[in-house]
Structure formats: C-alpha cells, structure tokens
Image (tube, rainbow, N blue to C red; front, side, top):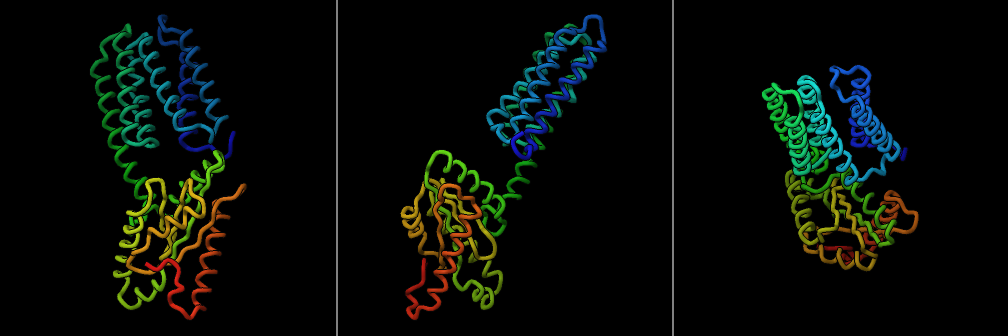
Amino acid sequence: MSGRLPPRVGLLALLHGSGGLLCALSALHPMSPRTPVGLLWALAAVGGVVAAALLLAGQRVTVAVGHVALALYSTLLAVLAACSATAVGVVGLGPVLIVVGLYAAHFLPLRAARAHAVWLVTAATAGAVVAVPSGFAMAWLVAVVNTLLLTEAHGRLSGRLRTDAATDPLTGLANRRAWQEEAERCLARAQRVGEPLTVALLDLDDFKLVNDRDGHSAGDRLLHEVAAHWQARLRASDLLGRHGGDEFVLCLPDTDLAGAEDLLARLDGAPISWSFGTATARPGDSLQSLLQRADAELYALKRRRGRAADPGARLGDG
C-alpha cells in the first residue's frame, strides 16, 4: 500500500469488497433454484480483485481511476439486477443504490456525483426491467427516487462544507491548510515534469498600527481589499492564500525567480505597503523548506529596510 490510504479509496474498496462478499454468500446460500450461482461467483471474484487492487494502489489511485471503479460498480449492480431470480433480490439492491449515491455525493464534485447517480439508476433500472421476476415496480421506484434525492442533497451539503473548510472567511482566499495541500500538489508536479516553481511570502507593513489606530474592523476591511487587489492581478494558475494574520502565501507554478519578481511587481497599488520573500524550488525541496527560505528572505529584507534611513528602501510599496 502506498502511504496512508485515502478515505475515498478505502471506502471504494469497501464497496467492491463487501459487494463481492455478499455475492459469494448468495452463491453459497441461493434464494431460489433459478439463482445464477455461476454469475454470483464471477461477480464475487471481480469485487474481490477490484477491492484488492484499490487497497494495493492506495494513494496512487487517481481521480480518473476512481471514476472508472465507481462506474464499474454501478454496472455490476445492473448485471446483478438483470440476473436476479426473485423480486426480493431485485428490491434488496435498493439500499445499495443509496449507498453508492451517497459515496459519489461525498467524495465527488456535485456535477460528477449527479452523473454517477444518473448512470447508476439508469443501468440498474434497465437491469431490473429485464429481470425474470416482477411485482417490485413501486418499491424500486421508491429506491430510485430516494437515491437521486439523497445524492443531490448530500452533494450540495458536502460541497458547501468543502468550500467552508478550504476558504478563509475574511478574504475569500484559500486558507492555510487548503493552500498547503494544493501547493504540495503543484510542487510534486513541477518536480515530476521538471518545471520551475516559486513560492512567495507577502507581509503587510505596519498592519498592527492600522488595527490600533482605526480598530479591527478597519483592519479586516483592509485585508479583504488587499486580497481582492492581488487576486485580480494574478494568473489563473497562481494560488494565493492567507497564511495567518497579515501574512499571505503565493504559489507560482511554471515560474522562475525572474518571472516571480515580474509578477510581484504587478501587484503594486494595494492600499497598504507590503514586503515579500521568495524561494524557487530546487531538486529535493519540500514545501516546508521553500517556505522557510522565503520566510528567511522576507525578514532579512525587513530588517535591512528597518535599518535604512531612506524610507524609499521599502520593498514592495503599494
């Protein structure tokens, strides 16, 4: 297994594994003489193999692979519904539909969750229609409607919670944890493909004086204005986040030191002066080492500026 197992992968493996186990139990104890025992053993084997593959891959399971594995599970449910020998066997798949819909809603963006839910109920309903038994239409309709409604409701709630958990409420930027997670992905990609990447720390000058003189509400408004000013001048690929207090962090993919300095110069004009420190990734760098170098440069420059008699020595005056 590759590192800590992500919950989205672990639960997807659990879906396939538990589905395979239930198919095996049904094959061992068929509900009807017409039960397709051979098919149940085949589905049990597929579920076990997919579950094992997901567990072994761990963090290497990409989003695309996760989509394929989830769509495969829905397809196998449809096959199982089509080959069910009793109405109870078909109706018994209803709760499984709901579980799959909730998984999609929890781990996927709402649009993707909707697409999976539609494929799930469409494929499973097609399988139920061609099944031999009958008399389960109303129970199946209830299961399908509940699956779609719960997927939509949980998807909307999960999306809002994800946004709230990743967003700084004052500035609307990525918060510290969300920024670090995305910046680490950018750094890993840059190191993999050999592209430059630069990280910058941005610190507002004399921000405490604003709070002391005008109050914290004025300081909050200033933070919001500065963040909006900077965000409007950055590229779509640049990642700006609030690091804490009056300090911001900026991840600049595919940008070397010279490019970073050019881009930072475009951020001038903010309603307060600010200082920055930068660090460009080297082989073997971690995000933490980049931030430490940028932090050291920032405060070295601020100390030099503080010793300078000329107020024009400020770095990054807006």
